[in-house]
Image (cartoon, rainbow, N blue to C red; front, side, top):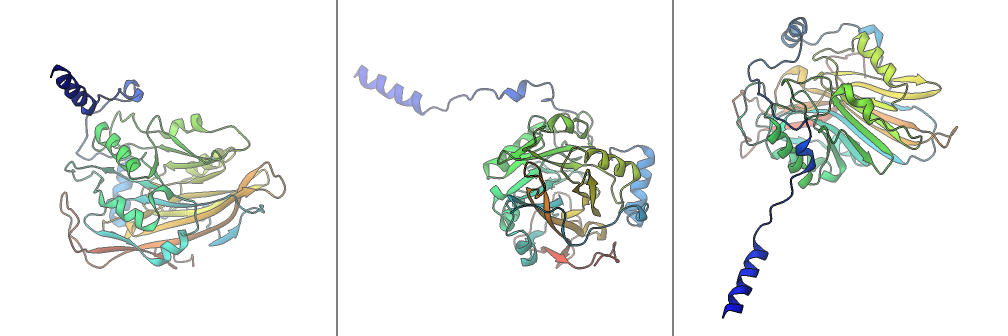
Length: 374
């Protein structure tokens, strides 16, 4: 009888949940929470706040229009051997404000042959109620993105100015939740980059944060720490930078980008919420790709400035002139537009209605802010 009791105890112990060891990152100095700023949490100076407000109300700025130009929609940037990789890029994926996000066949066809799509998931996947300025995603966003490409074909950046909107616990929950669903992610302090097939090194870093002392996301001033100095590695910078509602980059951003491209192989930026030019920079005989801002790939707020985005895909392979050097070969890009079938009034913590309404992302031949680009 005693032996049977002992065996029963052993079985109970075996079935009891085990306390998991504490993750090492929890002991890092950056793994601390901060006070959440809910009222007017904008990371700019007073002068920049005025510019932001003016452009938000009266339309995106056209300053510095003559300093940059768009490359053609389809272009061979460098002559390469048969490409080893094809990578797609999109800009900001914003909260949907109750819309059901769907992707038109034109978007699906554009990305059907890529190995990976890189996008910035702006905001936090959380169950907490949000405040007005917070970017709060429902878990529907995972299903919606998966309809375009399977989760393992996505690489989502989590480093942006809204990373700290709900504190460290929800930031960590979002990262884990996405990985459980199969999405690739980067942007935490200890996960600032993502190395794809031991060759493509994607690095993120945010120039801005709406929350003071948000140290658990990767920052722009630390991107060089994650550059891999190896001739076999192709380093891709995917920064959250630049200034909102400005259609053309400021000279200081242009200067910074050119400096970065002396060693980085490709830059695709996000944060301004409007498209900025996609161009090329000659660096010692190699043409390097520079997209200042992909605009919004998806945004539920029905504002004209938020409707447009820029999507891109490019081949990466060995240069014909130097097999030891990887470079961008063929490039293709398009404007996108968000079309909604019904206007929704803003409602705090709005959840997706059972039967719609629909927000469809489509490729468009025109962008109202760039009428000369066809």
